[in-house]
Length: 540
Image (cartoon, rainbow, N blue to C red; front, side, top):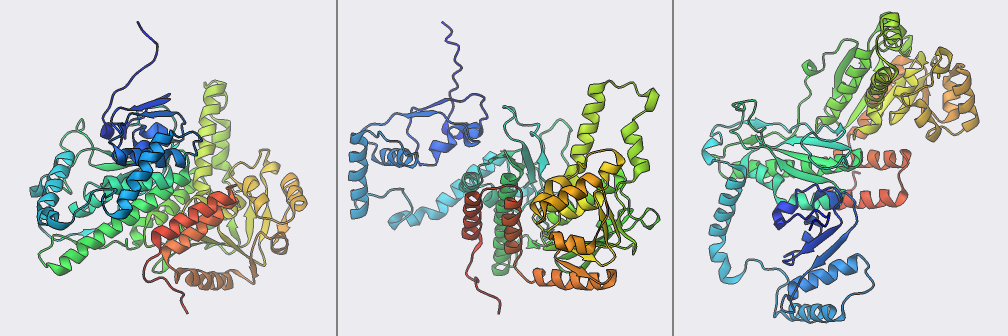
């Protein structure tokens, strides 16, 4: 008889990577060995916020398991807990307090004699899991740079379950030094990050010798971590914690090398700015000092009007700089004295908006889908300053029309020159401003009525008006003095620790984007607890 209910039987380990649609009931025939398994056994779907029921079978002799079960039920604030379970749990905790029992087993006493053997057994197990062979590790010294931590909007192709996760990252770990790779992919470490960020993190791919190509296109990809989450912020937080673990692992390898000169690796956990990596038409990208990057718009012939290629490059530049672990602050300005940006390149835009004209054979849905995707990609690129972890300083001079305000409203700090002129110009062109200015300015300015006037008329407003609105924090005489002021400001920010700069920017941005105070407090507590170390203290 078919009950119409699908039943899946899985081991505790296998359950962690599951992504099951409509998961409502989990039955633990064997009680979990650790409290965390009450979360892990429901797979990624359960950890992504789905609610359901868990039933656990225990006997009166399973005191540790019962104690974990009672803790889990209390954590979930369940009103009715079987009195017999509470009695067994309390009795067990008394034994622990008196020293007669240990809550979790560890190494001690004579067991230390077998510690090296235990470590070797664990290494053998990890090699089997990742199909690794020590002979594949390079014997020559090399310098390692951190992998890309790009966040991609949309569901990952390799996810077989329902479309619950809206953002993902693929973090390459294959070529990390072996010790670092094991530290980063260690289940205890990943489980902690999963719990703190409400993401799913899965080991994917197959191990290949470092710096070698995959033999065939049909072969599995190199080892990587797939990070998935419901929000971009959750994935970013998980990525930052993984990156921190990666740096700690690389530093551990470096320490080993100092102790034993025959070590296989030297480690450089900072990416060095290379101007050759940032050669883009219409942009000048440079480094003011280590950690302080400068992005300048450079299209003098059309007063820095943006074509499709320009806004795509702009987003790529900022996301690339943000992925560089050495970047702590970014200045955005113009090389053109008359203009920060005159807005969208209308010649380029008309080709898109008009399509193929009379020869355009697309139906309404095809045109709608194409334009909708274009606008969404456009928003993602121009909104990069608000999305990335690195704070941005924006110097606004001369003309600031249309798109210029979309760009600047996404930045962290804004400074204007006395000759700056602003206009939310889109309404004059015949469209609604759709790249961010109407969504961001209301939470920035202090005069809603004035903003409404500017948005609905498309009229010009001055640097003094921008100051009165609270849109800029300072008005400077000219472009040169503006560069000098912004350079000093950026250098002041750059003296602080990277994680404190990024965490402060993230905390503020979260509220600007509509986040709740309670969520912000919880987040900053996690970040501080995760990062504060022994060298904590004020800089006098």
